[in-house]
Image 1: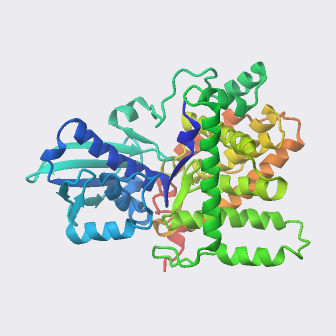
Image 2: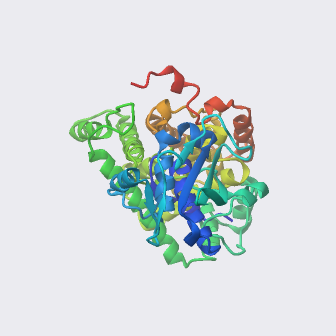
Image 3: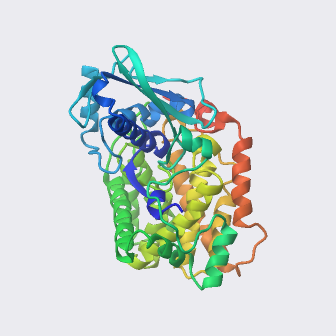
Length: 458
């Protein structure tokens, strides 16, 4: 099983596959050198980025992430306020100071190579990290960033086995498909969140599970709050001004007098955009299930918290556990990588997860929840990943707002029905993966098609 805490990880922007994953890979590489007792021999480190990492890695901050990972930083704990100063020192000195204190060369010429025309066959997001001594490579390791911050090495990608960061012992309710999940819930009289609770409690007591999930929600809320207040221009060549603060002030001013029946939708737009502007700026966000789609689940949770009733620890846990269960289905049977299946695997999956979770805490049955998840993805099928300038800004920020509103509508459609529907969640997950395979590579996070080539960057 994959844990809820693998689906929701605290990290930094702008991309889980291009930033969070490569940072973890850099740290893993150094840990491997230590285990093999090779690190003391190393006097230089190098990185090569392939496929989507090579094509859009500069805009997504991949090089920066690899450097930080090699220096021992972790996405969840790295001090975002000091990142630029650290990177400037690396640039000026052409060296890395590792966590052990050892200093190694990391040159401007050879430190990071962005291969814009080379792709490794196993996955579109690949990186090879190498250790050198006296100009000769003594060892190297290839890692694949398969979406959502998940990292596979060469052996794991061969097995197609995305080892979770938190391996679980045998769980009471193991499931691989939506039909299995629904049957387990119906046969045992459980909701999806209750089933997930039982699985998670094989490694942590219920109270700790609830507390950790509450911490994830608090991190999401802080991200929304900061995004609503932080002014300025987002980094990168687009010179895009943050829109959330102005929208926040306007909605606050209008809130006392408005009779607009769609006022709540404007707030949902704001919540999602605030998070994704923070993500685009490289600030701390929750990968949910990716950074490119990090605004959707916080926006839908904020909608419930603001317009339905305040979220308490119980509803918060039920929401995130249900969302994670749906995310696990996509992770196991399809993909959450924009470089592999386009944005349907990021915004589409987040929309599906949020729709299901909202339906559960609004009192829907297991059948309603499965229906909402299916609706959320069915109407994101074919969604391309075409970031202008290789930046997670246009169309990504607005796309999260649209995904959040769509998730709420999918939940409402499901709750108005009786749970019966023609298209199953399993069928729509398979269709999403098939569509992703058929999609041309220029529409899969390469910035070589769609809006990325039809919009002038400056």
